[in-house]
Image: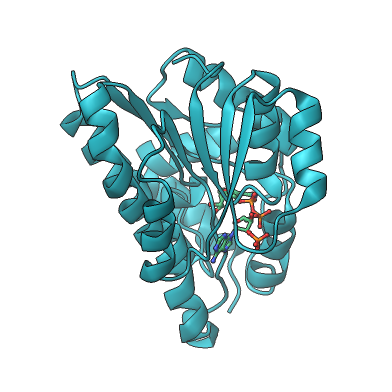
Length: 258
Ligand SMILES: NC(=O)c1ccc[n+]([C@@H]2O[C@H](COP(=O)([O-])OP(=O)(O)OC[C@H]3O[C@@H](n4cnc5c(N)ncnc54)[C@H](OP(=O)(O)O)[C@@H]3O)[C@@H](O)[C@H]2O)c1
């Protein structure tokens, strides 16, 4: 699908991958609908205007509640969204008994329920226009099951399963899906990984810049890829986790210390 002139909704656009993605879409002259949790960030708007956005619509929404998502969908009811990027996300981690229940509920709400809810809300419009793309930001954690990542990995595995089911469901409708099996990206979340997992597990440190990663997403959109997987060492690790699981599990267990 083209990016130029499309209406693109991006959650988690305030920073990290979402912000870099918004800038990339602006450079491609898209109409941006950026979802941010807090007050409008004038620097972000200026950055996107300078980059060349065709239009910018800022939507305020706290995606950690069903009501927040409902209010967002209400604001979007007359907007013909072509591309939905379900990107907002939170990291949880540590030994399960040490993770806060509030954090776990909050994370599942943002990472999974909001993704499902927003997709369900925007899909009827896409189907009636016979045009749309749903991009879901999962993670290598969906397949690479590290200790201390139990709850986060569960949310991302669910996002991958959700997207995979939709991919077939939407065949021949004009609406497509793109599943991002995102590797380490140098954002605030990546820094949190060391704090949350590092006590018990030797973390792989390979990471891309957000700017580089969004160029890969751009190519995947333009070529209508269904899945974007990492290359490099992480790509090799992912393949081992998927296709030679006993070897992956052996190596993970060797690196884990409770
Ligand atoms: N970085 C990595 O290594 C990596 C690897 C695999 C997958 N991912 C996935 O990539 C996505 C983006 O991550 P990132 O690395 O860019 O993380 P980030 O820099 O921490 O950004 C997270 C974004 O999500 C938004 N968000 C969080 N909770 C929200 C809420 N309740 N309501 C509205 N917005 C909320 C944040 O908004 P605020 O600014 O308001 O907090 C922020 O814009 C996530 O789904 C993450 O799981 C990242």
